[in-house]
Image (cartoon, rainbow, N blue to C red):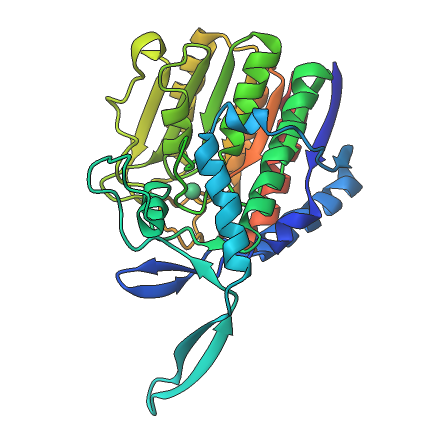
Length: 369
Ligand SMILES: [Zn+2]
């Protein structure tokens, strides 16, 4: 076993620049800022000075690894729509610069597209461009920009590179800096800032390459509806998530306790809900329960869907966690002693993101047995 800690990232991730999501008819700036990438990369470089960490870049894996998780038509839609958006002129948006005088300027933004309608029922005859946009999305917070196919595929390859290292190269601790994040992306739908499900693509790869069981522990403050959906009937991948109560927290439609898996996958899906504003103690208690269940499942590999948006200063305002929660979580995860791939999900408190990731990785490395 190679005990070294490895971080995988791509320089392309910084070019992922979603500008707006549309809420209640208003364009709202996206929280998924490119500064998230630079904050993490800076922290990884600083970490190098105090602990042994190898930094590497993603390899390119073939499309079959993507198509075995996502519907091929959906992935092709991402590509063709990215290409079409690249031909569009910039979007001009009037913005009030002085609330008192109502002085307005016109700002220019790169083109993007979001759905205008969503499927009324599931009618395969609906081939209209607008209908297809709605079919392949579940919200209006997730714009398609000209480079979205390129950056989403790069994030998936970043996850696959990490997956291959723990599955076939004897590495024990790998962190994949995936941006855009992935755990909300369903088999054929983008949403909540996610386009391709990086963690699911990695878990599927490990499961198929090694024929062994994979546990996914999702500690992002939101429910990973996409990961749950993709493995809902799969007994070889156990999805365990702690997240904000869907009554108050996106993606709202999933993440309840009675979602337990189906068919052969029944019993291999666990959701623990916490109320808004939950603190370190509640979060870590929930984590302990999930770790207990994961131990019963006895996986050969672990994937952590690593989101930091439960942090106290995060604009998502779900929990009130401090850095200590992530240090302690890493300690408990490390004690499982499994080959572990941590995949970046959310976390939008840019000032604190790098610090939290460095603290998590340092703690994970020192506690891994
Ligand atoms: Zn999140």
